[in-house]
Amino acid sequence: MVIERIGGFTVRRLPLPGGDAGTRMTLGLMQQLAVAGSKDLEVRSAAIEALDRAGAPDHEPFAALGAVFRYVRDRIRFVPDPVGTQAVQSPRATLSIGAGNCAQRATLIAAMARSIGIPASLRFRVIAANPRLPRAFSHVYVVAQVRGKRVALDPTYRENRPGYERAGTRMGDFLL
Image (cartoon, rainbow, N blue to C red):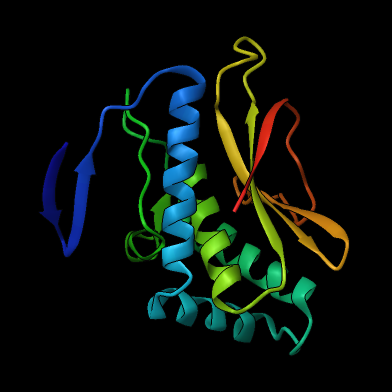
């Protein structure tokens, strides 16, 4: 493991196993980062800013989820990983940089939602979005369960709305 400090952030470079083991390792890191990020004051502050900007009413978890979703979709630029790399970063780093891939943006959404106490069961959904590689992990997003209703939160494309799910072979849900 290589550790370096860049711009106030600690960067760890780890070897990633191939296949499902690498997917599980990536999702485990995302879960850890989302839970830790939900306790970060900067992440909570961004979530509250999202609520304020959207005019989301108090005690309305669906409105809060929509506000957090739109904040990430509209303010955090989608940028793919460097070639040959699976990058995972903290929610604070994603906010600071203002960009991230689908995994980084999903981790940020989960952390922001948890930081404002949204009573949701959050899951990372992993799919193989490339039909030529039906078993290859290629996309991840958040699915929330609020008041018995399932809401997909995939901010990858500007036209996506809460509830939209991209077609692809589902590889599994990983509870956060």
